Each structure stands twice: as structure tokens, then as C-alpha cells.
Image (cartoon, rainbow, N blue to C red; front, top):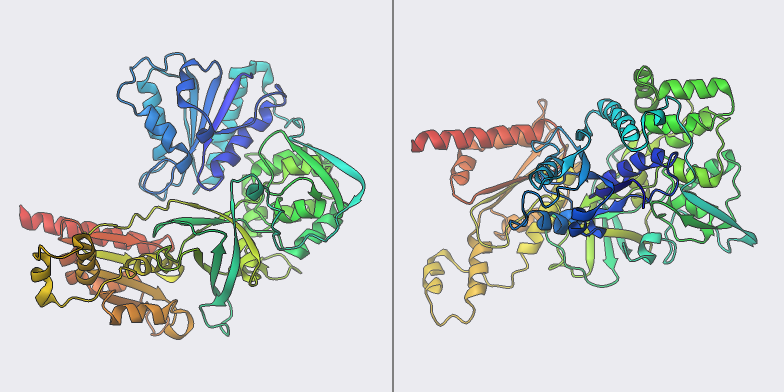
Length: 593
């Protein structure tokens, strides 16, 4: 059975990756230890009789809520009929993943720990609350947690300062004499995605891929990608789509050559841990295209793992130093400041040449990228729209070409009928689906995506516009055949929807300009306020526009059910909006007391 069970609850893959990080060193002492399990696949009632130490690795999503796959598990734990000794025999610990930039930092992990204690469970290790905004401190805390966990499970002799190479997670079996019939490429095929074949993901085809910004402006490329699903999917405004990208051809071929791998060789892979992104059997080239994260930023843990494979002592010592606490500053310079990728680390340390089975356990798995859905399942059934900025940048390293973000590059190269694996999850913006007070939306740049979805969704109410003078008459008409329709008519005709949008220049990157101005002219959007930051000597941002409309906004926020939504970049903008709302609320409170 094993001495430890690792359960993870993830939204984007971070918690699963952390769970694998914890699990991998344990296999040096217990090779048969079961791989981490999604909390959605575990029965909460089994916790009462679980004989193993249970480690919960939990991400916090949205406004301090648990990930989707944890919701049923969490509802069971919250059952009021459970006694304070229901989990008296459970030994556990919690690792939380969050971002201190948000108010409800690691709320899901904190709530889980508190609830388990209230049910009588025994905390065998102090919780670790990881902070995405401080990776160095997180690495140090996780190293200490790993040492404590090894001592707890296997005794003091299990501690070692040198990283041990655990047994391979993936068993690779070559198919003698069989090469791939067609070359793998940057495109997904209908059968190549492991997630689609297992039913975990869906597949969509590209309808169109057009530019929303002025293509003549260097460094400004925003794409409007329309996808068609195999069957209509019901999703709500504010929901998120996770897109699974592939590596670019140049990076793949360079990596195959550097690692001396035959890309055409077909192999079968038995996964003893996390599943592959690609379907087995497949060519080695397909594995590199769709599974290995060649362009990711190398982590301290990755460098530590590589040190065990370095043949040359000088390289082994260098990797060990970069993985140490003392070398954290140099690692930051090497990996972050100089923008080195995972693949470039292998170039810099040529004596590190593990085989394919070890590479699958060493190189992080390609993870999906999240995008707010920019369309409405009501307005365009069977379609999903993305609004994505293509990220391009140069590193400080000499003789390297311009780099493009992994998913950015993947999306920018999509052609009609290309296939894209995806999954949809609930987003953090919960828009009203019933009449409410005023709705204020703040979305600069690609932050416009969820608001476009909401406005398109709401504008699909098939009604006629009713003049204000007739509002009360129709409202009281007992013979009206569809009172619900009238209620929605009033919601979308007389409701206050105000949008603040910002970009650099109107002619360059005013995204969805025609749609937004049309919605305003027809009354579906009560007010459209734009901030073009570079069109005057002094830069003007959406927070400045909010300040100039503060009296009107304060009046709207005085309504009992007023709502304000913010999407887009982090930093000064959301803080300024929050400060305005807080000051407005404080002012209203003073006036009523």
C-alpha cells in the first residue's frame, strides 16, 4: 500500500507538479510508492480508515475557493453531521500553493487544514504555504518540508545532502525496426493527444486566426482565435479555457540533435506516474513536441536533479551549487535574468545526457495555458474565442534570436482546420445571471475578453427595446405571456453596464472597437470609457479615467447590488480600482451614520 498517500487539487497543474516533486524523492526509499492522486478521484469517506500519512497539495483559485476537482470532496468534509472525532485516526499535512499578491492567500489550504483539525485529524507536519511571488523562499520551505517528511516516513538515516536518482517513472520500450510513418510537427493530430484519447480533454478545430492590433507596429500582436468544438459546449461568461500548446520545430530538432535521440523511432511508454500529454505508442519526436517543456525556466529543483546525471565533476559541482541556497542568487541571474530555457541548460552542461526514460522524469511536462473565454455559448454555439497577445522578447545572451512565448508562438501559427486540445473550467469572474444593480467592468488590453463574453451573452436576449415610458405598464400587465422574458428584457435594456477599456493608441490596439462602439450606440452598453495611454504627453490609464468619473461611479456603487469587475494585468491598476471602491464605500458609510 505504501506509507504515504499524496492527494492534489489543482486548477492549472501547479499542485500536480508540486505533488510529483514531493513524491519523486520518496521513491528512492520506497520504489513501489503510488503516484500522486487527484483529490477528485479519491473518496472522502475513506479518510476515516486511511492507514497512510496523507499529504494534501492544494492550490487556491479565484476568490479564495478550492479547485473544481476538489469541490465534491470539500462539500463532504463540510457535512455538519460529522463529529469532532470523525477523522481521529488520520495523520496528515498540507502544502498550499498561492500568490501573496491576492488578499485570500492560500485560503483553500488554510480552510482544509482548519477543517481537518476540527474533525480530529492529527497534523504530523506543519503546513507549508508556498508563494508564487517568492519562489526562492518557497524552494527553501519545501526543502525543509521534504527533509522532515523523509525523517517521518523512513527515519533519520533517510536524510542526505546529495540528491539521489530515483527509479525511472516512465518505462520506455523501443519498437525495433518501426519508424513513424509521418513526421511529427508543430500541429496536433486527431490521435496524438493523450488527454483527448483518455477523455480528459476535448479537441477543437481552428475557424480563423486574425489580428486585432495594427500588424505594422512592432511588438504589438494580439490575435482573435476562433475555435469550433466537435459538439456545442455550454459555458458561462467568465469561464476559462486551458489550451495545450506544442514546442516550435527549431527547438525540437535542436534538442533531438543535442541529446542524440532518433526522432523517428517509435516507442511505447508505460507511465508509473503522471500520464503523458501524448498518446503511446508514438515517435520520440512526437514526445518532444507535445510533452517536454523545452522553453520553460529551469528551477532550483531541476538543477539539483541534473547534478546526479553530470559525468564531469566540474559540471556536477556547478549544478549542485546553482541548486543550493548559497547559489540562489546566481541561479536567478542564470535562469531568470538571462532568460535561459530548460533546453539551454543541456547545452551549457554537455556531460548531462540522460536517456529518454530519465528525460521524461527530469524535464517538466508541457502544461496548458489559461485564457479567459472571449465569446458566448449563447451568441456563437459550438465556438470558443480567444483574445491572446503574442509575447516576443530578446534575452541578454548573445547570438540568440528573438524568443516567442511558448503558447503565444503556438497560437500565432495556427491555421484554419488545425486542431487544439483544450478543457474548460469555471473562472474567477461570476457575472450576474439575474437582474441586479449596476455592473462596472474594467478591462485594459486583453483583459477585455471576459467582458466581451458577458456583453455578447447578455445581448442575445431576443426581445424588443421598450421605451422607459412603457416600462411600468408592461411590468404590471397580467396578460403578458412571458413574465420571465420581460424580466430579462428589463435587465438588459434598463440595466447599467459600464466598461472602462485601455490600450496604447486607438488606431493600434483598440481591441474589438467596432463591436464595443456598436454595443454602446444600441444601448446594450450604457457607457464606454477609453484610455489611450500614449496619445498625449502625459500617460493616461484606466485608473485615471475612473478617477475622472468618480462621482458617477460612486453613485452607481451606492446601489445595494452594484458589482465591479476587474480583469487584465496585475500591478497598479487593480490596486487603484480597489482603493477607489474602498474610499467610495467609506464615504457612503460616513453619509449614512
